[in-house]
Image (tube, rainbow, N blue to C red):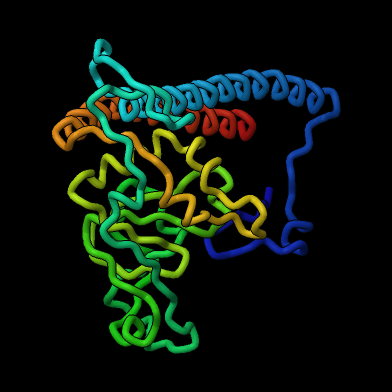
Length: 286
């Protein structure tokens, strides 16, 4: 029996494949094997589907938990008042409602050095684009630019602890992509940097946006654009519920402790799905 193997870095050509030998049992046995595999793989796929649904429910639970904490606080007995903003609803009586433009000290976008100049891209300075904005904290970027590339383009350096979010990308169809810079880095033209005032912690701002992701996207996304984008005027005029900084810290600690448990549960379900997929492949091969 001769079979052409698949190796990393080597594609199988049609001539190679056409000269490969395959084991062919009698038709009744083929039918029995196919029937067996149809039944077994259907059960495995069903189990995978159940676990994927459980993951979605856990993510929804995390979203609801964050939304409730950043709009209603942690005290269920506190006196509430109308926020005056439909998507926020009622908030604790001693909280404020402020527009984003009232809590931002500085905002700017960046740029992209010429890709024709190789010496603009020989490293040294992390450079963030929309593909990098995927985690709560941005510690590294997929590309780096040189000091010359920075100086000869509209790319700008953002400080550690700044809010970064995507203003133009297909990702905005389903989520508001936002992160916090963990290092100094340059950004391109599709990233907006916000340096916040002392009235709000960067992590708390991030949790408000993520906890109300779908409602905020409805308010600020530009639907008519060929590429989804953020209406920056609408964004800066967006109102947010704002407790004092000490309460922000307590809410962040609560969110961290509770969502860590949910994240662990999601990770466990994802590992179980991978094991089921491995079992399915092994079963078919056997």
